[in-house]
Image (cartoon, rainbow, N blue to C red; front, side, top):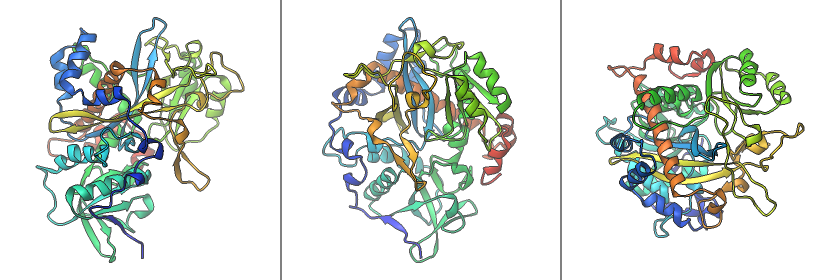
Length: 479
C-alpha cells in the first residue's frame, strides 16, 4: 500500500523548506524596507515619480480583491532604451509560483517566514464565506518543488493545529490515489479508504488542467481557472494584458510587456521573426519552468527551431530583449537588458526578478522577492557559434538524467546583503515591479471572471473563441 504523507502540528523545520544559502542569509535592508512600506506609501511614491498616473486609479488597483487569481508570481526584467529610460517589463505571471525557499527571513523569530504569511493572508480568508463541504480533510497538492510544497503543508498544520495531508498529484495519480465524485476531490488515506478533501492548497504546475477540473466543490487555491486564463497559459495572458490595458486607458497605468504576436502557426513564425529584425522569442504558450521558450538571434537558431515537432498548433512570438546591438526591432522601440553590475572580469549577466504577491482582506500585498541570472555573460556582439539561450535564459528549473525536476541554485540571486547589490536595482525598481505584477495579476483575474457565466458555469464557447487550440482543449479534465 502506498505510504500517505501528512504533517502534524509542530513538524515544521526551517532547514527542510529553505535553500541553505537562503536560510543562512540576512535580507538586504532595502528589500526589507520595500516589503514594509505598505500600499499607501507605495502609491504616494509611485504617483510622485509618475505624475500622469491617476492616484485614485492606483488606489483602486492595489485595494482590489481578485476573485480567482489570488496568489501570483511575476517574472520581470529590468530594461532600458537608447535614451536611458528604464522599465520593469513583465515576461509572465505564474499561478502557484515558487519563491519562499529563496527568500531570506526578514524576522529571525518568525521561523515560518512567507509560508505563514501567504496562508494566513490569502488561503484561509479565501475559505471564509465559501460553502465548504461539511466533512473532509485539508491537503496540500503538488507535482514538483517538494521543498516548498511541504513547507506549506507543515505551516498549515501549525496554523490549523491539525493534521494536513501532503499529496503528490501527477497524471498517474488520477483515479488511482485521487479521484473526483460530484465535484469533490477524494484521496486514498493511510487505511486505503477514499476520503474527501474540503480544501486544498495547490502546487500542481505541469499541465494541471489535465487532472483538476476548472470548477470544483473542493476549494482550491489557485483554482485551475486562474491557470487557463493566463496563470499557466501565455496565449490567454497576452490577450488578457491587451484587454486590461485598454481598460486602463486614461489612468496613466499600463502593463509593460514585449511586443507580442499571438495565435501564430508554425508556418508563420519565420515571417514574424524577420519582421522583428531576425531576433525574437518563440514560446509554446502552455509550458512553464523555462520549458518551451526559444530565443532566436540568427538563422541557424531559427532553422533548428523549425525542425522541431510540437503537440500544439499555435505559438507566441515576442520581441527579443538582448544587448543594445542585437535586440528586436519592435513597435515599443529597441529595449535591452540593464543586467547585473559588471563583475571583476567586466562581465554583465542577464537577470530577472520574481515578485510574489497575494490577495488579502486589505487588498494585494507583496510577499517575497528573488532573482535569477543567466548562465553565460551578455555579449556585445553575437558569435555565430554561440547559442543565445545560455546568455538570455534565467529559469533555474531543469530535469536531470532521471527525468526529475531539480534546480540550478548557482544562478540564484538572493535578496541579501551579498547578492542584492549585484542587480543594480533600488526601491523604486521594486515598487515598479510590484505594480507591474499586480496589474498583470488583475488582468488575468479579469479574464477568469469573464470566462464564468452569471449562473456560475464555464463559458466553453468563449474560451474556444479566444484560445482555439484543439490539443490544449483535449487535455482539459472536464471538457
